Image (cartoon, rainbow, N blue to C red):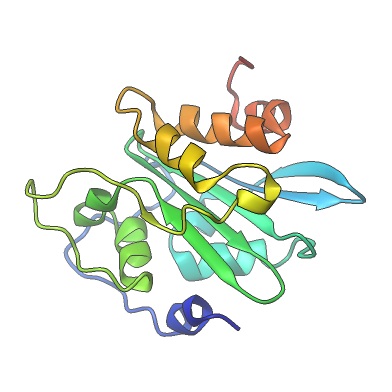
Length: 180
């Protein structure tokens, strides 16, 4: 089990932040995984994306040989990618400053062992493992360039990631985006 998995078990609930209640804030949550060599994309309920512990537990239900990839977009503000396989949990948060407003992002920052950013003092930047998808076809550099696009919305970023990994159309269908 990885250090992140150990930390996940001890994750504290952070006070003073807006929760992610699944009604209005979560744009979507999906899991992508390979079954018999083909990509599959399954929608997750918004309840699965309320916190990291619940999200990781939901991802562990899918085949884990190559790892299930969870993708969550919240309030057109940030996105989170979580990759779970048999031995470890890895994650990437698109904007560390989202932790000042959203408990899901704060959970990610805490799990990564980073300090919570100060309001309006820190610049938006990704946090976590930018290399989590490299063996699937998206390098850390390519992911960093994508996340650096200030004009892109989280759903567009995740659609681009899905396209590079080979399940773009399935992703777009699952979340209701028009294919590029």
